[in-house]
Image 1 (cartoon, rainbow, N blue to C red):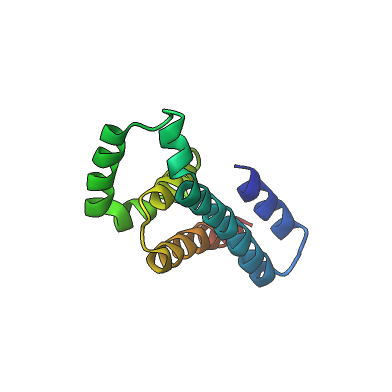
Image 2 (image 1 turned 90 degrees about the vertical axis):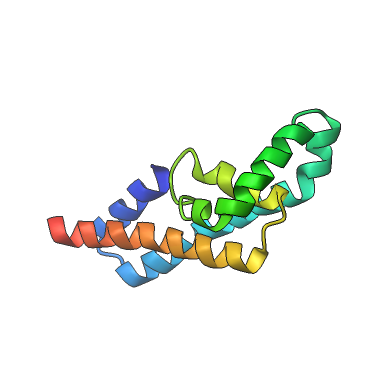
Length: 121
């Protein structure tokens, strides 16, 4: 809840909410891109060090091929969001689709917080 708390705090400091929305979305999306890249480039290393087994990778790939886009809609969630974006990189999910889905979910999270802040204040 670090970025969410900071976002609400910054809103209470009367900073421009639209700039905050853009910066928070950009920063959080950039973090997901880093996770994707680490997965994309780290697959060989993970397999070589036996941190990742081919059988589990194949199972994850089947799941992701079936629900990949839908699962990325949960990339905004704490705890499970980062692993989802990491797996998308390992499985070489289409980066354009990844970027669109992740950006929309991150934007939606902060838009929800923005609306809630103004509704309750």
